[in-house]
Image (cartoon, rainbow, N blue to C red; front, side, top):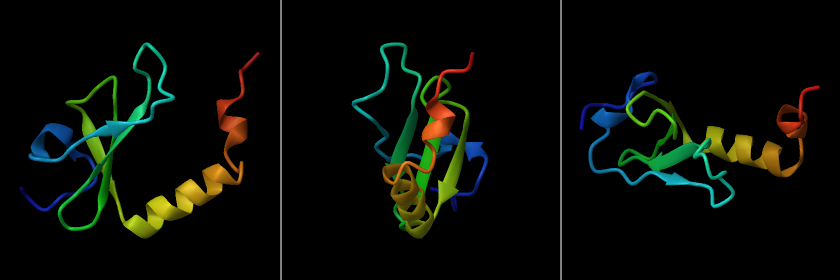
Length: 81
């Protein structure tokens, strides 16, 4: 595998296992995560699995998950009127 970088095609990340939340809706609208061999975490759009992957450090993912668990992003999921 090439050195992973932000924006690379997710299909170039060979041998990784993509995982999406069990809370994903029936239309598959969810993000998927994959642990990379170098310790980073890749994220892709499940509706466009061949599209770009964003690559984050474990610390960045931990900060995002902590914020999500604390409700910091709840306003982003609210229905728009």
